[in-house]
Length: 450
Image (cartoon, rainbow, N blue to C red; front, side, top):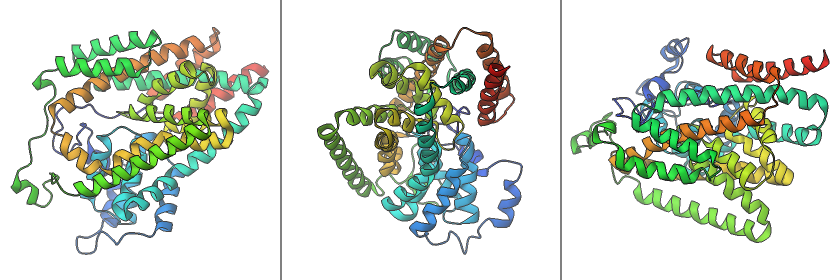
């Protein structure tokens, strides 16, 4: 589930890449060990594909199966592609690549967004909600069950020993993800200065959104034109040529605006009802929505904001428990920010878990309602690309400030340090994060018994 493998940076996207510079051609091809053979056998022919849109039951069950095995974050994209393009033939290759590019241009958990956007293309807004529900339901059910067990038993010695090892590996996962993030996004002196400044400000326990906003403002001023090249404008010829890849600027603009207006109205109504009926749940919903808004580059980037909201601002749990929730997220399918259900359970058990899980994805779903139009308007804006590049540099700094907070929360003993180092080496050698987490828990419990 860990989003430790982040995507490429927001530099000039060459042909075949999305607006944020991630290689959608490579993603859409799938893994090299088997996709090519499957594609040769199962790829739809031009005269009979794509198939007609599925019913809601088929859509839900298909994405439910994807959600049950959604370990590895963005590494799941080839599996989604094989399901919707090759096996089901609901979308053609070009449509799926466009979906990936759109979802990478807006904040949120990428695989969840791709699943929801596929549903939007196939069956409109009801289809988006159906695909979304199918994809996130397995992760929500597992994390909610584990959260209930954790909050009932977390003071037992066996739980404490197991989670000591798990927290150490969680540190390794964050360091590994932070290093990958830095390698991809800190490409110039300006990027590195922004990251260091944001890290320092975050360690002063300011709300992460403040240094993030300052970083974006600085990026608009310091980046030069050659630092943030953008795609060339679409021409009328390109817009009318099949496969040219240029969106029509005004296509579906009215539909997207109506969808977004209705979505915002429902969201505001939801928040007003919560504020009047259950102020604590209102705080939970707003905290989770703020967290999702900064998930550029992958869900891992949102963890510093989530921690600040939950640990420092609201005081719902200590650092150690928050890290346990993130660790539980590592061994369950779906995006890592589904750990919001763990937090929600602490606030108000099952109702809190539902509110948190819905809220953490609400901004992403609202973006998707008009993402096609939004991306066509901003993808060639130099200011947009400057701001996104600065935000990614800032998120690198926030991730390393989170690492410092995690180190402070670990007990000063040899075993956690050894497990953290061993976990980092295992992740570097491409071992599945879920296996690493379970192994660390087992070693920690065994060491306590011996």
